Image (cartoon, rainbow, N blue to C red; front, side, top):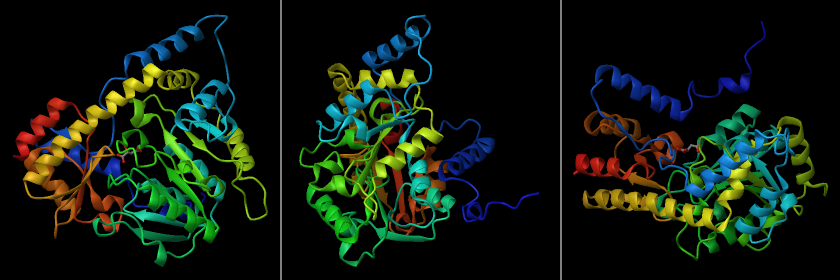
Length: 389
Ligand code: MLT
């Protein structure tokens, strides 16, 4: 028998969300009548808007015709969709050839980690989306530097004390804190990466929730970012595509290794070797999202979830808690001073029948916080507000 991959031994036995689910199921065994409401995993709850569904249906119907049938598409994604992402999301500040369509940001993070291998050092925000660290550990990455992001530093790391790393993971609007970095902060980040010859892996999966026009929706709004940043993003939280699966990664041509060769060429190699392209049905759905009607529909979706966030935010504030996020992001980050996140999780589960996400599941700096997602049916949000009040 072969030995277990030593990189996997370092991981906890279960990923955060399956562990939450396990505790939820355990509670239901003893309280089968409990009507649990989940504000745990950030999974969308509103139906996919009409014009986007039409795009999905049309693509499916065409696949059933001799003329419309297509098999494998280009691994990098359909030309139409790459072009639409470049023009509608990036206003042509990136080229379609720099956009690689994927089956979601999480999957692309894993492939990016494979691209950079085990020898790189990485910096991550603390708290952070667990995949940045756990995926790196799976690759065998040894050096991980944590960048504390607390209310006290406006959730932006102190770059003057940050040691050099090869990669810097940065998520804005942030999962889990809901903080959205300002233009000035992102300028500092890009300048830091340039000075240290680091590559930023910028996760903009929640960019569609940004309401403040002063806050950048993409790292490429920062001058010079194309030389130092990769951007990963997703249609999941934008259009209710968590189950449909569709995302993208931008690797600019300007992004180079130390020897001057293009990172993009290697990404193309990895993509064509390990990925057969996103589902064509999803990709036609993606094209429908990026039409004028689709963009209007997703703006309404974001408003709906942000109204949920506002209702929750007001309630927690009224109850005297410190609440962050929820204004440019679908997450609320609530501080319960002096308490442990998993105890709080149990407390909310047992007393209010609400499933949350414990802040410590996102890192040491998350201890004492709970994350509440704003994804949810309005009627459930009202029930939760009643239970809490
Ligand atoms: C979360 O709740 O943090 C996200 O939904 C997880 C994900 O996007 O993979």
